[in-house]
Image (tube, rainbow, N blue to C red; front, side):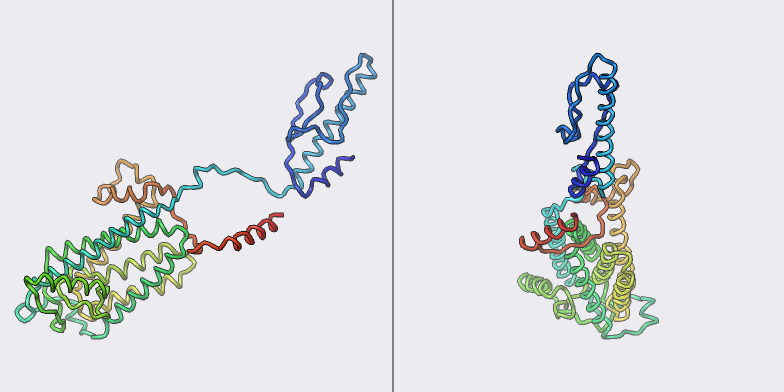
Length: 380
């Protein structure tokens, strides 16, 4: 059979044939030539043993040269008909972004604890708020120039709910939702823990006479517990009528959620979705401005809330995305108190988290089988 027939026969399977003939003295080889799979070449006659006559020697050398030429033509022809080369990827690179859902669960419990603890601190601080009839609001430059708009705070909370809903939907469809989720939960818990500290150590008077504060309970522990449960059940929103306590001014929790939701939405969405980023930025910025227009917080509350939220978010993601900083001796970001928690959450994340999406629920087995059949047909 001719070499062209062999090439045509193996064109569909597209095997890889690698023949390496390095004989310097052809007549001395006792075995027939072999191809890469270890089997003798098909339709190739075995070389005849050398003879002592010059004619026999020349005849054997000519036969060996023809066999060598046939093998090389087979190898080059099959290589020319193959469309791709399979490259083996080391296994250690395949698992550089482990899910570790149990760490995400720990971060969620950390955030949940601090959110509940915030309601406890608000209840405690409410008992210490100065009487607005005896202590007027503190001077604020924004209030001097902008009169109060009663419905503005409703816009703030509506924008916040929209942003949180958008981020929740986006997070559910992220491929690496486990890693992103524990980052989000850790930052929420940390920011509200900071808020508990600032609210407790400095209690500001109400920013306006319009604010209605629930009566103080003093030593009524049962009444305080019911207030805590009511605040938790309503999400701490004025829209639900659950937030009737005063004192949680420094700093603004609404500013935290508006800013943090936008930062996560932009960080973990494709750059080409600029229209989506601008829409979320408008929701966030208008919501923050409406806090001040409604005179629900002092300007310093909003400024500190924005500053703490953005800096903590940027510090954390700088550490997470710049891996050389983790072991750098002059990395001052590692001096933060939460660096051990960061190392615990990000220890096995050895690459920057890509922006990739996937279905949150695995496809049924029948769908997966159909998918494999379709992919197999495409490969052929």
